Length: 251
Ligand SMILES: *[C@@H]1O[C@H](CO)[C@@H](O)[C@H](O)[C@H]1NC(C)=O
Ligand SMILES: *[C@@H]1O[C@H](CO)[C@@H](O)[C@H](O)[C@H]1NC(C)=O
Ligand SMILES: *[C@@H]1O[C@H](CO)[C@@H](O)[C@H](O)[C@H]1NC(C)=O
Ligand SMILES: *[C@@H]1O[C@H](CO)[C@@H](O)[C@H](O)[C@H]1NC(C)=O
Image (cartoon, rainbow, N blue to C red; front, top):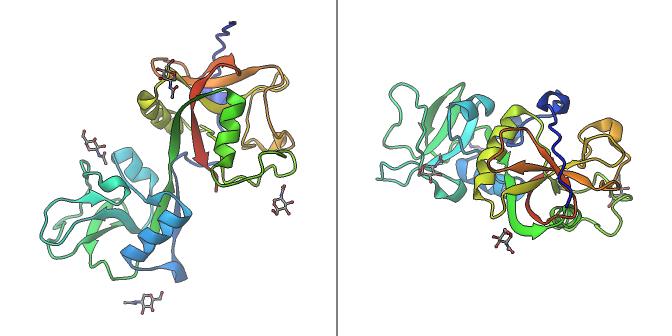
């Protein structure tokens, strides 16, 4: 087994045109709706209403609107819509949270409560999916692209039509988040969507648009992993090794 140790400077991978891995979408204007309708919409079209875990995420999910935070009447415990996680981090405005209102929205950086049946803009997000199965890079690619029934038999013809793909980690924030999430993997390394078909590194999802015509990657056999214990951006491995992998939802 040949192991190459090539460190890709993260800077080479930065592309200003694309956002965060934890992408969020703000719905506003005529789409303003109640907290429950917003939750149902986000769960259908994205992952959920946004969960905000720390100050950095609070800055990233910028905007005005419903967030995933709610509490049950009579309870003082605030939870996130996604997985009913307890809200460890909060950023309440002055005089908040009110005890008689059950849903939370964000106004600038600060959070406020409101009646859940009021219409507000709202924020949905799309998460990174860690698949704890051991697959080669190409099997992992097929797995991700099958998550919503794309035509994996003919990747070239349906290129760009997948909702899911092997994950693209573009910004330093994506990278930090993925590094946290990789700790849950059952393998020490996890495939990402990074591959090298002809001596040039690219994201299989086509995020670097000049590579748009390349439907699938490993012709020379090297693909990119993120390591549990590594300190570098990515490591390069033989694409035939079996690893857990990250899928993500494209928008
Ligand atoms: C809150 O803390 C618990 C325990 O450390 C953790 O499992 C959970 O994921 C945290 N929730 C959020 C939203 O950060
Ligand atoms: C909320 O929006 C719906 C339509 O999206 C509308 O029928 C309803 O009257 C609005 N409610 C309020 C309180 O503005
Ligand atoms: C994947 O590989 C790891 C490490 O070899 C192993 O611990 C784990 O049980 C494997 N998982 C599956 C689902 O086979
Ligand atoms: C995407 O799918 C549609 C219909 O399924 C097809 O007409 C279109 O050519 C596909 N686009 C690409 C870029 O393959």
